[in-house]
Image (cartoon, rainbow, N blue to C red; front, side, top):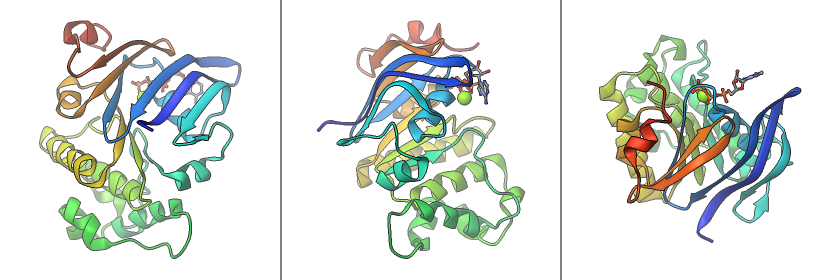
Length: 235
Ligand SMILES: Nc1ncnc2c1ncn2[C@@H]1O[C@H](COP(=O)(O)OP(=O)(O)OP(=O)(O)O)[C@@H](O)[C@H]1O
Ligand SMILES: [Mg+2]
């Protein structure tokens, strides 16, 4: 099957307050799919609902052959969804190595270890800072750490929520290179939330634009109308 993830008529709410009002979107295998839209339209809520951190109140989430909407978060992770949350959520008082190790909890079985050389070949800075506290890293380094933590769970689909937020342009380009490599060499599929169009353009195969809890536009990189797309972004 060509699609790795699909949401159908997806609704989700915080308490009585409905945020997602029927989201339909698809992620194709070995592609980068990017969700864009202004602050507060529900992008993070959509990612949290896909991860099971927020309950699906209506609709479905299809991942590979399974409808995962009722699965607990750990089971979604074990099935192969890696999550890099907005704001990174590094544990400041654990070392870089210990932060990465947490990601191995997503492995389905066997010893919870990871190949350090493999991870440090993608992010050499994490080798240099292996024994430093996570909280002492720069924003960009923490972002790389959060991606490394997700990768050691060996995801088929990697979700990244605004990975460029508040980090230096030079590091965002390094991150873009790594993400490209993951798709090209490891057959990974990526679901990206991004507000910076310049960064999104480097990677994206398909765009879904959200407004007020729904998808309002869908473009491929070939037919994207960037002027229209920009009209849905915060200035
Ligand atoms: N924990 C929460 N409890 C109640 N409402 C929330 C909670 N988190 C987010 N919301 C509300 O849900 C709506 C969507 O928020 P969400 O974080 O999904 O937006 P977003 O598109 O990711 O925005 P941003 O671009 O700023 O990250 C907003 O109106 C927000 O105030
Ligand atoms: Mg958000």
